[in-house]
Length: 291
Image (cartoon, rainbow, N blue to C red; front, side, top):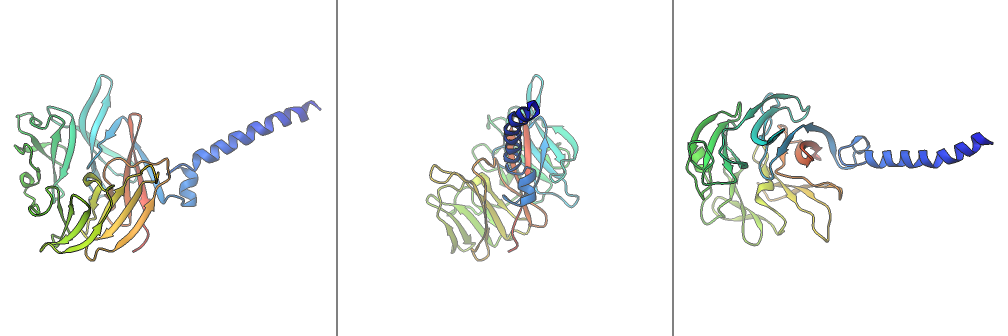
């Protein structure tokens, strides 16, 4: 009789525990979510004691599968700007390099050559130790190569990369080997030919420039559509810049918030997304449908 009473008491407790464990493991990028393919997440790695940026935060994987992750390393007496060389699929780190900056790192502009990056600070007027506003560093070890004074200007010219220029928006970018231009106009994000002909119009106020990523081939762009009061789901949208075709949508669960830009895998079959949890950064890998 006593055993039956004990079992009757423990059974509801065990049910609650099991149900809670199942609910937890169904969270985005957790075990059951990956096994069942619910969100499209294929894996997640944790970068401990490191906070990624809100905008561009990581370079695309190189031929060895290694990327440069920019942000802030959390230390006992505060935080400091740093760059980590790591494999975003496995989380294996090669090294952590301190960045020689006067202030907190706020923006990274990746050079088209895949070798360098321009860094801006919160106090944008003075960022490099020598007093200039931009520090240009190597993606291999974070070493400063040169500095540039690009106060209130785009750092792209300092990196030797062309810009679309007028009449396109100040933050317009080239895609598809310079054959297409992606411009965030006042009322929409649009894809143009270099002659100014509209290829596609993305009429949403939820697109933001730091959350736009061009694929390695230059043919596709990945965009993060932010959640709203009416629709509490972030969406990852894929567009073909050659003909303006919308190729895919990945709808995130309501509890998921991608922070910063998406980064394409080398084979264009997946995307890396970033989340900050406490003092750590989670790099989540999502598979894309074939298109």
